[in-house]
Structure formats: C-alpha cells, structure tokens
Image (cartoon, rainbow, N blue to C red):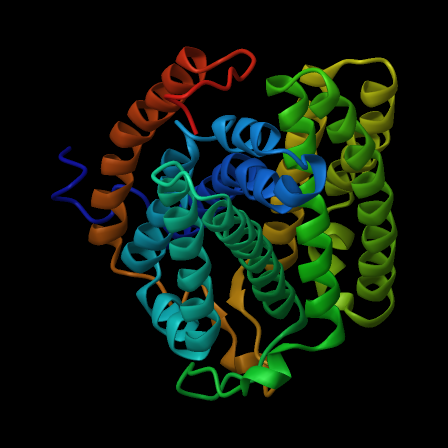
Length: 351
C-alpha cells in the first residue's frame, strides 16, 4: 500500500493525535535548546561586569543560538501544515504579541552579531542591554501565550480570537510569563556552569541559586492558581491518574537542582533543568489535549485538533516528511554541540 496515495493509511483522529504529539516534541526541543540561550541572555548583565565576562557568556552560545531557533520555525511550519485553522487563529488573535516576539528575536540577533563588530565600549553596553532585553521579552511573551492557552480566551463561532491585548494580560498568564522567565534564567545559569570558569563561574552559581528560589515561588503560585480556579487544566490527569507521574517527576527534578549546585555537578544540573522543561511541556500539552485554543465564550467554539486539522492526505504526507527529517535535525544538533563542547576561551577572534 502506498501511504501517500492512500489517505486512510492512518485514520484521521489518529493522525491528528500524532501531529499533536509531534508539535509537543518540537515545542519541547525549542524550549530546552533556545531556553538556555534565552537564559544566558537574561543572565548576561547580571553574572558578569567586565567586558571579558560578557564576551564569555555570549561566546558560550555564539556558534549554536541561531540553530536553536530553527525548532521554533519548524514548530510554526508544522502548526501551519497540520492545523491551519489554529495557525490562523493564533497569528490573527495574538498579532501584536507575535510582532513583539519578532522584535525580540531581531533585537537579540542584531546585538549578538553586531557587538563583535565594534570596539566602542559605549556600543558594547547598548548591545549588551539589547541582548538581555530581547531575551527577557521573548521568554515573557512565550509564557504569557502559554498561560492564555490554558486559561482560555475569547473565541467566537468562526474560531476567531476576539480578545483585546490588555485582556490577554490576565493575572494567570502574567504569572506564567514571569515563571517562564525565571525557568529559562535558571536553565541558562545551569548551562553556563558547563561553559565558564573562574570568578565568572562563582557568579553564575550565585545567580543559579537566586533564580531557583524565584522560580520555585512562582511555580507554587501558578500551580495553586491552576488547581483552585482552572479545573480544565487538570481534567485529563484526573481522568488518567497514571499521568500524575509526570508532575511527580517534575517536582523531583526541581528539587534535584540545588543538590547539583551544592555538589558541583554541572552536567546533572543542566539535565535536571532540561527534564523540568520537558515535564512542563508535557503537562502543558496534557492540559490542553484535544484542544489547541480554549474559548471562554462557549466550549463549542474551542479550536481543537479535530476542527482545525488538514486533510488526512496532508497529515500523512507531512508525517512521512517529518519521520525522514527529524533524525537529520537531531543528528545535526548533536554534532554541533559535540564540536563546540568544553569551556569558553575568550580571544580576539571570538565574541
């Protein structure tokens, strides 16, 4: 049987669930990989005061930061191909937020690449500030968007988002946004422990402790809010109790981070924060499934994997392409990280 020619190779509902899972994988890959270089940006002005220290923090992600953003581009392309209705709703309803996200991405790229092109200390400060501000802005917007998806948003019968920008900044989404900033900052600090040394390493470890406490406080607040006021967030976990294993493992990963800092185990610390992000991505997807956008107007107006998906033929064709392409992307990513492993060395040819 030719799987491309036969649209019933997998039934439609199975294909929709598979693509929902693939989107979760892409989102997880982006959050882990770009999450730590966003975290490096958030920490950039905090951990190092000298030009050499700041060049070292930038140098730790210099060869890899743009490759990490490929996961976000791939996520957007996959969302467009698999669930075009959801793609249209997201990008029209969150238009201003997406423009701000694009601004943050451009700001980071310009500051990273232009900083090394000038010898002016004044311009170095401008680019350092822009790099940090862009990183904070991106992390905050991603967290606010995730919070709105969980909280729900005004979607009408045409599956169009009708929520003003200020209404998107509700308390839950703002708390989720701040928690995401703290999570990525902690993740970035734990990554920097692998790449820097000396006095800069001591400063990074101090900030890792601070970010851990800030993150834990925000995590408790977000969790308490969701358990009290958003029963839809835990509906799937309550229906399948075995899924409680994921938040349990997440808590263990969170608690393991201080141990890895105290015992000077940078690799295990970074693995722990990666597991935390993986668990959050899984919890986010479980809280939504089978919805992609929840309507606060009427549950009948929810954008779901059923009413937002492409045809079975399109989903099948894209699935085959994804199964061929994903191993290549993963192999390339592993190769790049292996080549640029080790401690950062600051010299005239680097950042």
